[in-house]
Length: 72
Image (cartoon, rainbow, N blue to C red):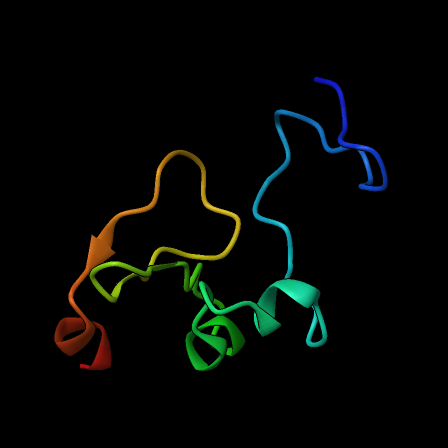
C-alpha cells in the first residue's frame, strides 16, 4: 500500500481508527457532522441524501440508508 502524499501510512489490517473532533472531513458537505460525532461513518451520498450509519473507519463499501431511517 502506497500512502497518499501528506497522509500517514495505514496498515491494511488496521482496526477501526478513532475519529478526532476537529478533523477536516467533518467540515465536508459529504459528511454529516452530528452522525460523525456519534462515531458513525456519516458519509452522505449527495445526489440522494442517503447516509452511511456504519461505524467510522469500517471496512468495505458504505451502506447508505434514507435520511428518515438514519434519524431514527
